[in-house]
Length: 228
Image 1: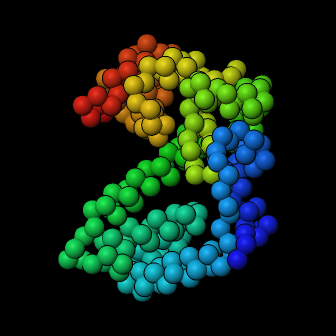
Image 2 (image 1 turned 30 degrees about the vertical axis):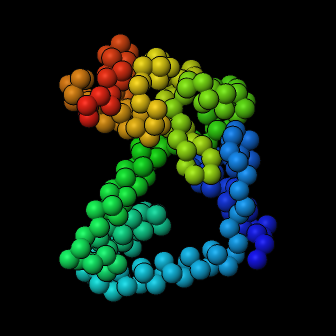
């Protein structure tokens, strides 16, 4: 079945779930064009995952099921259910734990938490307006490694922690220049996680205090021999 207009619209607007204008965000993307999923493919996915989640729910203790249902977002409900599945073996055999699946869930949960932290993530339109530039100009800054950004699968979003009163927070560009790691998720994780070189304090907190040189030094060493 050919992709329908409604399916294409859903796919193009994914990045807007993080608070932005889908059209503006899409204009900053340098991604190859891919066909949107067909309606029957989406329905098959929903059917199969629905059956799996039903099996998980049937085995979950009532208190944990209530906690999952009470989560703030549908995504949080899903992650809670999947963690429970790994624990009770509803979809994974209890005698043969799948470390790759568990690692994937941990990594996905960390990414979700990063997207929520310190004010969440902004669309290209939102950050561009704050910086007084166009979304296209912001796209060029992203390509030149001048802003923190994250790829959410169908576009880019920008962590709000890098915003200062007048443009970007002082020191952001210096920190980005200092990194030896290329992965954007690792860079954001560095900013939000306590670092031993900073006395266990988070780089973003130190940057807000004006300790740019200290954060730059820590960023330059980040990723070396499993540095924290």
